[in-house]
Length: 205
Ligand SMILES: [Zn+2]
Image 1 (tube, helix red, strand yellow):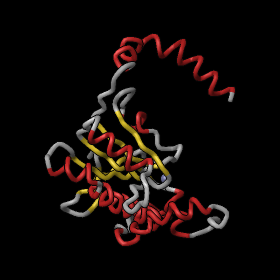
Image 2 (cartoon, protein in one colour):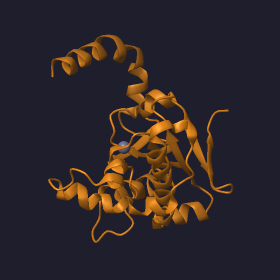
Image 3 (cartoon, rainbow, N blue to C red):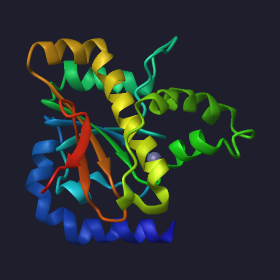
């Protein structure tokens, strides 16, 4: 805990004063342009890899960057998506998976899930990744099989995202664009899914 308290102390002393006017503007309203759906993984730090800050990204995170398609009741992910699209009127929705994702690893090898009934049930949402599995990329080395499945999960969850009624309406009306990304922790690079070509291409050439 000490490290966090010290970090907050530094924020109050060194960061906040310089951004006081920005926080003043943000204190009563937000108008984020992007909805960002990603994994809970601690190594994915959106503001760091995208150069964004307070007020920029409306974020929802969960294990495996899942957008549940069939749910008997409301869930946090789809409610957040609905709010972002209908109320905040974000212009883009980005679904971002990442290398070495524990959720897809667990879906692949099924180890250690006996003790975690909730996680096991949650992982049923990534089953569709298997049918969208992407070609093996030799650059992914030993993790190529897992990376192909993680990219497949991005494609699968992108389908689920587009199927959300609020998203479907906004996309049809031309006021929302949906993107699928794969973030590689080792290289720091992002790939974007090209839906026409049905493959992932570097976001930055
Ligand atoms: Zn993950």
